[in-house]
Image (cartoon, rainbow, N blue to C red; front, side, top):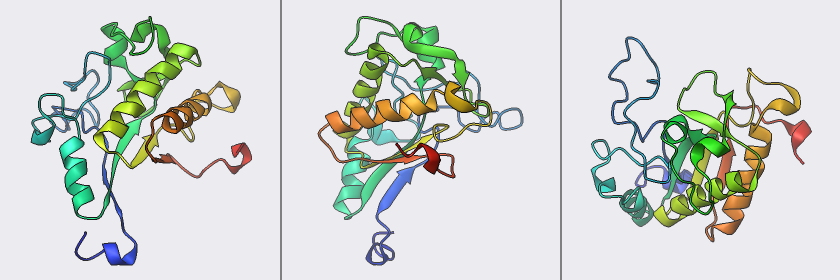
Length: 198
C-alpha cells in the first residue's frame, strides 16, 4: 500500500472487526461472532489485541508497535471498534478507570447490537464518560489515527431517541478532544443521519 497507493491519496491502514478475539472464526459453522468468546481484555474492561494474531501486542503493548510500523511507512493507523463496553467486562464487574464504579454499573444491557454480541451500550453518565476517556486515551497512546466505530450511526433495532448511539457518539467525541492526539472518528453503519448533524 505504501509503495503503490500512498501517492494516490490512500493513507489509512485499518485493522477490522474483532482484533481482540483469540478464537475468531473457530466456530464459523455456528456463529459469525462467538457469544462470550475468548476475547483479550485488560483489567479495566478494555479489549486488547489478540497476541496469537498480533504477536507484537503481547505483554500489554497493544497496537503500539504495529502503529509505529505503519507510521514509518508514511501511512496512518486505524482500528475498528464496536460501540459500548464489553459484556464480558460487565459480567466480571471490571473496575472503570477514572471512576469509582464497575463496568456493570455503566453498561446498559437493554442497548445491544443486533448482529454482534460483544458489547452493551454505555449509559449517559459521568462514569460512562470516564470509560470512554480511558479507552480513547489508550488508543491515543498506541498511536491510533483513525477509529471506525460500528453500530453507532444507525440501528435497525432502535428508533427515535431511544438509541444510545446518539449520546455515545458525543462521549467518543469528548474523549477524543481530551486525548491530545488528532483522531478521525468514522461512524458506521451508514448512511449518516444528516438530520442529526448537530
